[in-house]
Image 1 (spheres, rainbow, N blue to C red):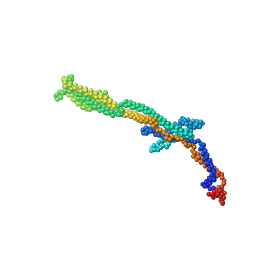
Image 2 (cartoon, one colour):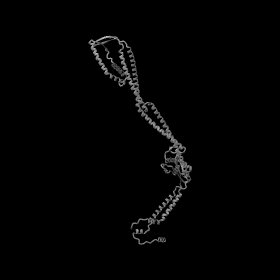
Image 3 (cartoon, one colour):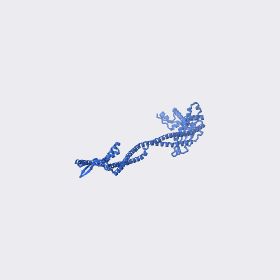
Image 4 (spheres, helix red, strand yellow):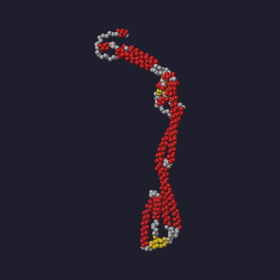
Length: 522
């Protein structure tokens, strides 16, 4: 027994022709059944309205709107509001929708049924150049009554338009109010900061950065004035010393009480000798300077300029004074030697008579000396005052960097607040213009471009789809029945089947007379 050959296309075609009724009858029955189902199912109609997103009438370059979110985002927000339970219940009651369902189902289920029947679809954006913004969307509603479906769709469109105007106007008002509150708060902060800067400038008057150059100029002028005054004081002191020396010299000529004068015999002549010690002007000046130094040391510190100047003058005079004292000691030793040798003679000398010229010069020098001393005293007081002023301005200059840093901190905060205030002020003006634009309905609006029309054909159920599904089921059922009937058939239909089954060759076949008649008729 050989294996059977696989069935080919002709074999399948022969089976289909042989079992054609098993294919045709289920197909026809299923098609008729699907048509009946279509006739039996309730008809659902759909109405659609096209709404245009119309831009604002005033160009955005002149008035910028306060609503910057996209149309899709705004539609989602408006849809949530329109499709809320409260809004949909009003629409259901107004048009008496779903009367049968309302009798046997709760309100939540009725509202959910209507919510599923509403569709909001955004149209593809129109690409014109760089503008790809969404400019239209559709609202659809499905129902069994065409007239009511059209009315409900138009009602939903009007609700969307009203809600959009309300949302835009409310948002513009809230934006304007918020900016106004922030602006008032910022204005208070700005005034407080201005008062802080004003108080700081009043407290730091003279130490501000912009006054640094003036302080430096004043300090330079005071230092120059100090130098000039110091020079004047030293000149006055020098004059006083010179005048004092001259006065001392003149006083030597004044009448003195009778005294014993020693005379020394030198080369047969008697010469008077003064034993009072060296009376040279340089020594007198040296003694006066030492006296002034002792007085100054009781008043000032060792680092004081007056003490330093007096020490310098004394050190300059010390070599000359030392030389004079040594000369005097030599002369004194010589006089003592002569006295021991009997060459000194004591004699009473009558006092000299007063000289009017000497008295006049003495009075003149005394007056000039007093004037020089007074001038030196005034110069010292002026020097002390100038040094106090210099120290004062030096402290000012030293404190200027610190004050500059504090002022920079205050000014930086003030500049930041001022910039924010100006920015908010500009935004407030723009927000007010946008608010007026929305109130006058000149902003972006929803406009019904194509209102909902009375639907002529139902969208559900889909007749073509139902018939196609019925035909597919009938064809599948027919193929199944054909395969089942063919598998149950044990008869031989071809010579090859007999040979395969019996394992012997077929010598002859008896043709089907009906088939031969058909061939002859053909």
